[in-house]
Length: 446
Ligand code: ADP
Ligand code: MG
Image (tube, rainbow, N blue to C red; front, top):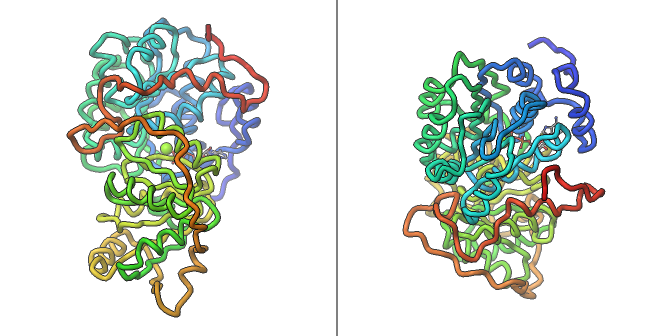
């Protein structure tokens, strides 16, 4: 491709109010995927976008979507745009990214996700909302209850369509798309485009323009990968030493029970770790993510599903405590570090019996990893990870957790379809946020 100067947001067709709002948040120039898709979305085309994790897809679809709605009026219970995301964390992050730009254009957003009481959401939806950002299961519930009507929808975005497919949400996604006008504009974003995602595209997108920036695997180039060969007896002591490093560390384990166990073990030896998996109540998840983001609890232990789409800046080390069983999982986990062009380190702990399987996954993921031994004279693994001795002083649990409901089914990104006792509505809580510094109230708040 010839070198062309990157256009400015204004040159891409975004209005000055929006450009200024972005500038206030330190977003000055468009990333390549944004430069590629914004003009086509503004022109009303259906767009299929593919870019590696961290390439800036949220604003790529979000900004032109907002501009398309600007100036119009939404009726109560009838949003004019919906954004579907596979997990509630991802939905929350999309809402956070679009909140200020939407406000700048006089538009209102609401996140409608599972794991929070249905009724509060219904009340919210009965007022004017321009853009609903939702997980498919909960939005389908609202559709079934008649608390939302999609007849006025002009634009639908499906984000992380490949994860939607993996998690088995396509039936709800198609149910929702079927209830939007056939003439509405549709956008679909995905790290990979194959299998079921192709089917979705063929069925719902109308002469889409495809934009792809670099292969999904390109994201791993800015990372350093290491495999640590560790004797099983010292595996958890090794994990604890790694977790005691300075900096934000994300630890992946295979099971929900494994998350709970490792989190408790780490806290017991003095590491402020939080755990995230699909059975945790929303309040817990929100708090754990907030503490990880602001560094209060710089170690996050998570399952693959729980970590999907989480965007926390400056995660400098990702640890596969249990080696991933397939290459895609390796890349998705690794993609939580080295975001937006920064660099990061990824280590995979492999015990003797796991070696053959782990080698195979790494080869299939086309990852070039250096192997380092743990437990002998060779100390390179500590240099790579920053490992140090944990303090040994237990970190107390501040708030007793409400009992985790035990759904008798596989982990889903939302913990069940109905309202869950003991959790708080969170759709309204961001209103009290003070980080904008001027105590502004959101328009339309009563
Ligand atoms: P993706 O969805 O492609 O994985 P995101 O949309 O979450 O990526 O963006 C990744 C990070 O890059 C976010 O922290 C976001 O704030 C930041 N970002 C996005 N666009 C820009 C931009 N044009 N300039 C600076 N930072 C940006
Ligand atoms: Mg994204």
